[in-house]
Length: 133
Image (cartoon, rainbow, N blue to C red; front, top):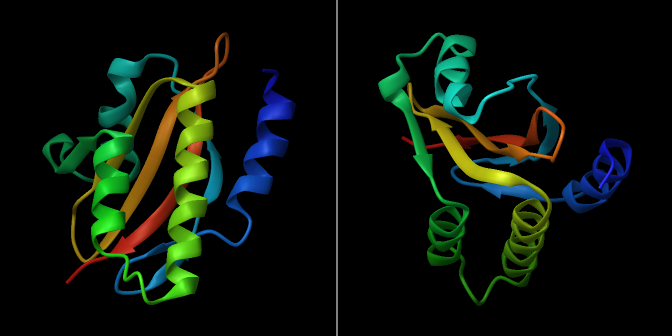
């Protein structure tokens, strides 16, 4: 998939999708310029002035599982949002290689990145923020 097509599809999939924690933050497109998967954690730590040990890497499945656990089946808005996140993750995993979720755990406001590689391109994906006290 070409980068422009990917960006358009991703823009559609992130519209009105929120990472719901103690607050709600939208997902937004990210193109990092990181060339090697082994460099992602180091460069995210540097960007956020964090120690690389504060960058937690989880699978998209684990990330979704945690969201689903916190989804109340009686709240139709949250259930619909969770389904949108699932579609977003499915799309990213289908079109990107080396897809991982990176959480920069330096405090209450936790930057969250879901990143991978388009064949022949640099590291792309989405980012959001989780508030956790």
